[in-house]
Amino acid sequence: MNRKEFLNELNKQLKNVPTEEKEEVLYDYNEHFDIGLKEGRTEEDIINSLGSIKTIAKEINANYMINIASKSNNAGDIFRAILATFGLGFFNLVFVLGPFIGVCGALFGLFIGGAAIVVSGIALIFGSFLQPLLPQFIYIPVNTFSAVFAGIGIIALGLLWIIGIVYVTKIFFKFTTKYLKANYNIIENRRGVDENSI
Amino acid sequence: MNIQFKKGVLELCVLSLLVNKDRYGYELVNEISEKISISEGTIYPLLRRLKAEGYVTTYLKESQSGPPRKYYRLTDTGIEMVSTLKDEWFNFTKGVHELLNREDLNE
Image (tube, rainbow over all chains, first blue to last red; front, side):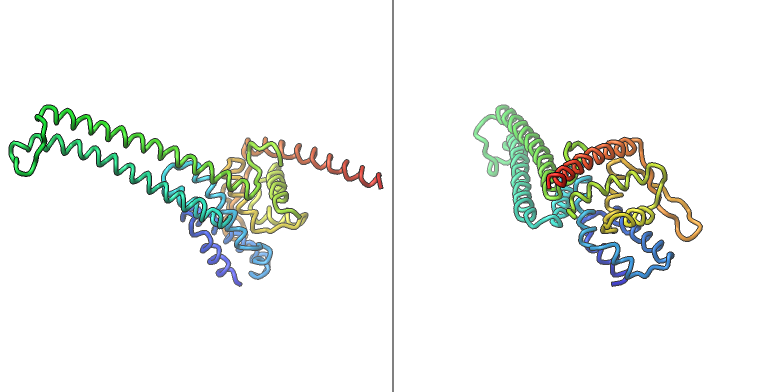
């Protein structure tokens, strides 16, 4: 293996890390090669000393997960963080990613449900105004006044529902991040800042 | 040697090497691998983590021989951390030595 192959392989194994971070990492290893070569070492020798690309990539991926995911609360970042932890084990793929996608889908569905409720409330209000104009298409068996109030009430219900779902989603993302962190710490048995034991 | 144990110790070694002098990555790798056998490539991820956690900062400095080098410098939090880790290390190894000596004497 030569320098270019080493860096290409490392780049490949870091594909779930954002470009900016990846560039910084590759910069470090390029610098390392530059200095080593200037000292007269061979590329092969430097590569041998650097050790396993997989181990390096695993560390970088895991660090990314810890630092970035804990600061974000959107599904995309957390999804990427879950992907990054695949380097730490197949367990995460099956038992974390699967359920995560499932719950995201369910939450999205519930959100749409809330939106649908809001839309029906709006439809009721508009329908009750349009009924006298289009009696053959619209039939609302209450007087306009009641319909409008009912419509407002339904819209309010829908909005409350949406707010509730958004809140639940936020909590879910926070929980997922915490779980990933705990997962990583258990697997890597890494020293944290607030751990008291080695 | 146990990988997890080495990782924690490596953090201590890197930070303490930065106490008296700012160093660039290659320098750190060399100094450490002179004394203990390590997978040299993992120093850089470690340095990234230390920077992300606020224990070190980096800056670029021109060098006479070649491209600019990224130097690592301890932050105040980093200096505190070294002190804490050093104490823990010395206490720990003192305890272990005493245990080992006790076992030797009993033989």
